[in-house]
Length: 359
Image (cartoon, rainbow, N blue to C red; front, side, top):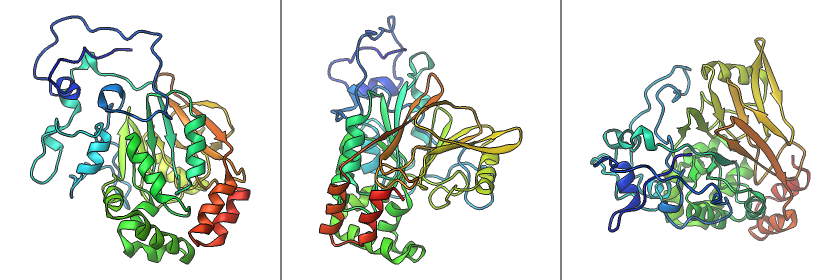
């Protein structure tokens, strides 16, 4: 695995790496093979100790599929103030990214300035989705997770559960690349609450009052999609990044055809598994095991905070980029504690009860 040159005194490590303002004057040092990766349960202390974070975070126009017509289009320019989320992505310091007045990064993207010989592959990545304000579930996953180079969160940090503040703060503090889910979006766009059942809408309204403006701003700035190592990352599906449920073969096939042989990591359904194609037929497979990835494929790590496959255990996965594999993992958590948080907040009782059955 390639590593970066040593930090130069008085300069930002990221600035020296990505601005490309001078060439390498000597050989690239190799990392000690015995040096351990940072475990996902260890909080990041800054960009310099998070070597895999910025691999392939730019939108991929071939994979950024617009909602509705199923055609591939160039990703739209970013709008609004993205500074908070950008600081999270870039290790809490976005000073080395020069922004245009409209906050677009199109002309200042990070990767084009990184010379190919020192571009680093992220080896192992933890993939989480649908935390849903379940602190006990998230805590159990953090303890169970093996050492990884990076962690991705595919959306819905909030909703249903009774600990939204604690969960949002944990995700922000750890600097995970996080996408927007439908419950995250509902907190900042009340118009879509008409699509929610009344109990779910009640939790969203309570969450808005509970978490405060700074956390709402963070939710507002979350992106709908990203690509990493040419794998599409979304909350829901390739053709509808936030709202579509991929639960049956017809919907799965329509989305698999849009991927053109690629792979998509998504959440939203709270049901772990892999939809793929074999001899022209849609397949679905899941077990707590390691699968070799072959496109086209829709890979769902399941839900950390509200599993719905009949197994009341937190679900997540480990993506090994170099090996091209995905490992599904399950871990038990303090269900009683999560239920107590829901009841203490006086949220609908059914959201507490369903945690017992994983339905």
